[in-house]
Amino acid sequence: MKLSRFALLFWLGNLLVLAAAAVFLWIEHRDTRADSRARASAVAALTSDEPLIDWQRTATADHFSLPNISLSPKARPVEERTVVVVPPPPPVEKTDEQLKSELEAELNRRFALMRLVLTSSEDYPDIAMLVSGNLRLQWFERMNLKEEYAQAPSAELRRLAIDLKVIEIDEQGVLVNAASFEKPDRRFDVRIRLYEGKQTNSMVSASFAPDGKALKLPPLSQEPPRLGDPKQWPEKLEPKDYEDAAIDDIARHVKATEQGLQILPGLPEDSALHKHGARGGDIVKAINGEAVKSMSDVRRIVRTQYNAGTEEFVVTYERDGVPGTKIFSAPKKK
Image (cartoon, rainbow, N blue to C red; front, side, top):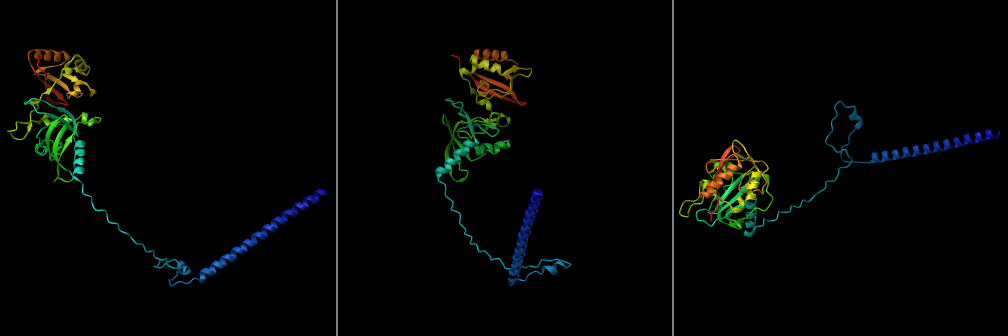
């Protein structure tokens, strides 16, 4: 009997919950419909001078077209914007000091001064050895790049025919007179200094001008310098260049072949060979006309001729299949 009473109470409780839920849903539905009718009445009461689209009629039309009318009951206001144009500041005229500083920086960027060959002899001029792109250059005092390079056989060399004159070559670098790149009517004396940065691959592999030619400085009474024979400017050897340590260093980086004495790839930049212009892959063919195929040949030829009073040694070599010569002068025997 007690169990039946408990079941009856349980089902009555469920009925009350369902009834309350039904009443709540009915009230929400009624309020929602009332709100919809209120919004529809408010929209219907809106008026506008703009023509409205009859969507019912348009839906049944054969071809739908959208006239040039506003879909909003009211047109949106056009926002007026004021554009303020600020004129650019007037250009500031650069001073001569600024132009000179920019010219010096640009020339030191274009031309890397790698070495100076300074002599006190009247027979040989001072030489500045530079690298520009893939070219190794030799400059002399009173040289005019515009005149010398304008008719050069190499297109790369002709691009260097700029308005620049070499004034002086000394321990501080190369003093030149050049026209400003920005204002060609302004000329300045600026200095190209020895390159102090890290050498790049293009600097190491830079080649001389075509045919191994360089520029020669004539006496003051003659014409301006023209392309000449590099044999006229031997490179001076110092005692440390042919001491036993230097000879042993050379022997480590060469090998004997039938074609000549070949310099091995990967030649260190601080080696004696590299200091005097040698590159990996070069083949030394002869010294003063005598063929060399080993270090023994080199020692024999140099020792014999030096003891006989020879002061200049012409080294014939081959680089990438192109023959070349390089002249070295040794100090006189005391």
